[in-house]
Length: 75
Image 1 (cartoon, one colour):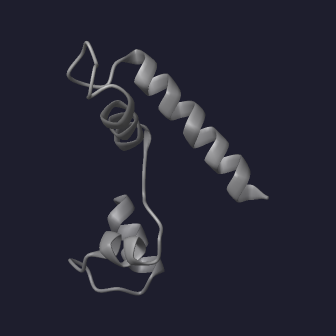
Image 2: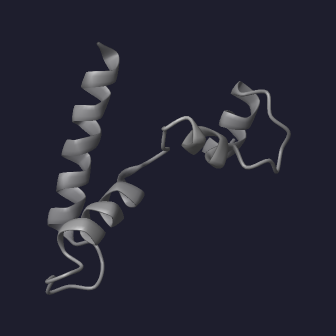
């Protein structure tokens, strides 16, 4: 089962509905290491970056950010 399907089931929304838009309208986002590293790259590297795609440092920062978010949301 995909993340989208799991969210649709949990939120009791029909398959094919835009569950991510519904979450976004509530101020939430669904992220994983890939999307977080891309966001970090876009914000911190894209203007003066020496690379076009998220690198190892971007991925490490994404993992650290996700760990921090998980700890904060657990409290």
